[in-house]
Length: 314
Image 1 (cartoon, rainbow, N blue to C red):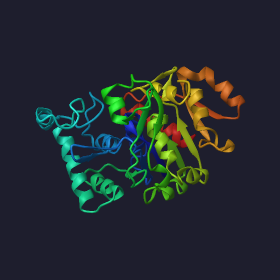
Image 2 (cartoon, helix red, strand yellow; image 1 turned 135 degrees about the vertical axis):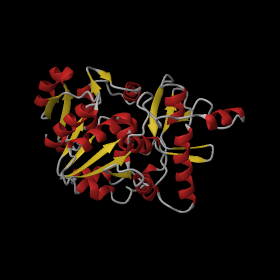
Image 3 (tube, rainbow, N blue to C red; image 1 turned 90 degrees about the vertical axis):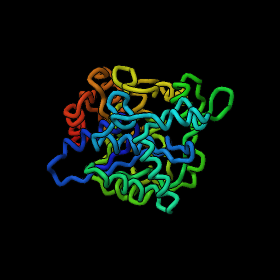
């Protein structure tokens, strides 16, 4: 079985870890197409937060308390950067994490692409999946806030905690970007494509915005989406602020309609709803949706694996 996941952030990392557990011992092939809109240059090094979050989670070296970065981190370099008034004092880079960023930056200067770097990073640990960036182009997410100012997504998200009203999210240069090598083939060649329960706007949105990705999804065998909204609330982070900015209600049915059915020109065949949102299923079914109500909480690997099985067998 070949499974391709579009993912980003903590929700994506937890789902992919569960999917790997669900398919352990089989000859299944898992490819994860990862959002790179969160990427940025900081203090001379290139950061890829979503790539690294998924990599660390699969390697078992992630910080489960904070939800990002490496376990057992120290922060001496960040302290020194603050002493020099360099970088962003509110954006802490752990020393182990910084080692990854330095390695990535060195390889970029040696001429490697982001795809080649993801493969090299993934070879350090037996992660059991193929990680692909959505594109080899740099299309960092910018947030247009209320007064028209543009902030890098990480500044809006990490410094301001999404409290500054956003009007739009943009990825400058994405119109001329192309899918990273292997992305289109991973989507069209999969038995099932899964949209992980990641932020629909800033994690899944940039992947779908890369020219050629939606066309590949149109040719996919089957596409299943998992709601990132449970009981009318976001599971983690400030996805509600992102949804509000683009005029989408923070509800599982509204996110489904945001993605749209493939039969109507959207991207989904099947939508997984949480048990807490079961009352929304009849309306969606009346609209022609294939809806499955399942437990969506991924509080441990076993529950994430159960969810993954439900997704790939729907």
